[in-house]
Length: 215
Image (cartoon, rainbow, N blue to C red; front, side):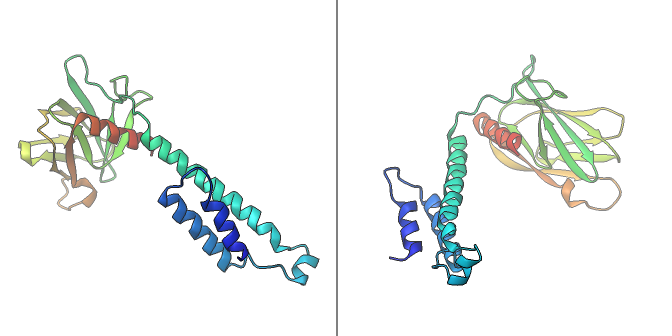
């Protein structure tokens, strides 16, 4: 049994079962370091110059343990219970701020406090996500040009103008993906203004907000 086989046995044995993804990553590390010569017996020159290769296996083991710990932490986070990250206001309306800036949509959701422009707001680029069967108010704003935003399936369209307030109110449908059409009103199509509206269950919407919060 050579050194790489011995280290592989250390990585893949034990009382705690390893996930297939962790195992694949660890074996890939062994293969990579093996190809680099980390598991070869040191030459006389290497030992005489202090570059003795026997330090490599402990270092490789440390790297693998660190990667495994990170992956285990990510898995733990993925399985944790997600707190409620949004709520409607007293009228039962979810208000979302959609801002046009540099030919893109920037979307801002109220966090757990239910209010916009506070520290717990959640930001997302371009694509709009909303919970199903909820009254929604989109506040439209712009930081540079005049934009338009349209939801063809609802036959709604409104503009966003710097220093002026415009809004769009509607009740979301059942779950589905719909067109969100934007324009800078200059006669040229800007791809980042053309997006989608994803209507999903409240629990899926909450999970999506959690992912946006962690980015």
